Image (cartoon, rainbow over all chains, first blue to last red; front, top):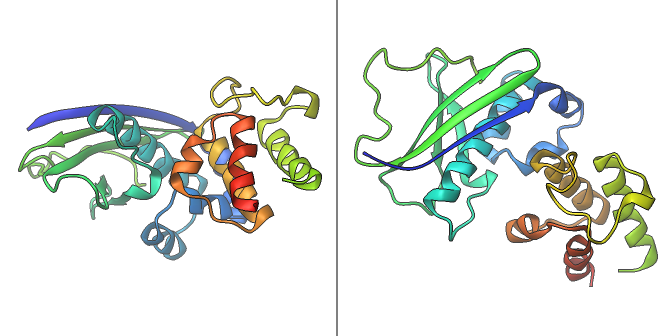
Length: 137
Length: 79
C-alpha cells in the first residue's frame, strides 16, 4: 500500500445550521446520492459539517496525489458503515485501486476529518475491529 | 454584465464575506480574507446560481479566486 496524500480539515458546525432550513447550498458539496440519504436521515448541521470536513480533507489529500487534476466535492461520496465508521470513495476519474482512509470526529462546535489517499489492492480493507470509534456522520 | 448584475454580484459577495461594499475590490481574493474560505466560496456560488439562474462548471467554481475573476466568469455565463 502506497500513501499518495494526506489531508485534514476542521469546520464549525454552526456554519451549517442555516442549511437545515434552506438546503440549497448543500448541492454544492453533496452528491445526488448523499442528498437522497440526507432526506431519509435527519439533516443535521453536525452531519453536514462532518461530510464537508471529510471531503475537504480528501480534496487536500488528492491535491498531492494528483496535482494536475482538481478533485472536487462531487467527485467524492461519503457514507458510513453499519457500525457508524465513515467511509468515502471517489466516484470516477482515479485508478480503481486507489482508496480513501477516513476518520471523522465531532464536538458540539466543530467537526474534524483526517483522510489518507492510498494505492494498493487492500487499501481500504480493514481488519475486523480495526474501525475507529468515529462519531456517526 | 450590466450594472444591475454587477450590483447583485457585489451584494452577494459582501453579504457572504461580511464586508462593506467599499471593502470589496477587484483584487479581493480567496483566502486573502479570513471569511473567504472554501465553505463561504460554495455559499457564494450557490447564491450566484440562484440569483442568475445558472449552473456553474466546476472549473469555473474553482477558478473564481478573485472578485475580478468572478465578474469575468459571470460575464461568460450571462453573455
